[in-house]
Length: 186
Ligand SMILES: [Zn+2]
Image (cartoon, rainbow, N blue to C red; front, side, top):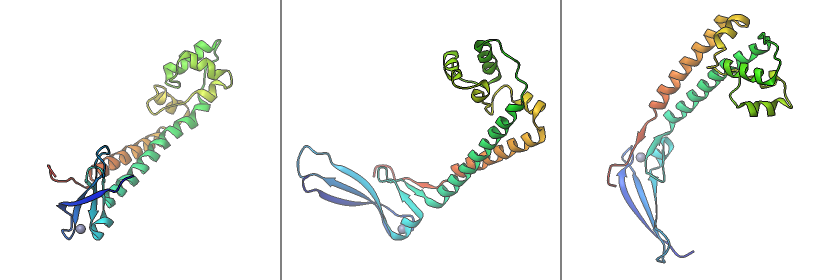
């Protein structure tokens, strides 16, 4: 590794105005290595509130990004709770008795309880029962019937409403993440 020459350029003022966004250019002392460019935020106060992309120089506000991350986790948990509830009902579902694995597979596919191919199903079926394999997703076609027959509509609807609200909050928080891009041409 040769000796690098490092040049520092102030390319923009930082958000508080006391420091700078800097471009750091490192040049190798030989002709065959490439110049390395990166960005740094040279301001102790702004460093606490903003994270800089060393690649693009774009600043991301830490607080709004954190809020977005938290809202996203809440949304994922609320969606998972819907699917979990549906799967808790599945053992009570009156499955018909099947003569062949082919008809089992067809039934599960139509109801949205299996997404693989018939070959994959037969393979899994060597070691597992139909009940091990069947899985309800939020958009499975069995959902309305499943809830009506063996579940509770009120419980289901409140979980769905919760997931919807959490998703909207997460979307809003995601759009609210504050960024500052470098001025063009810097
Ligand atoms: Zn600053």
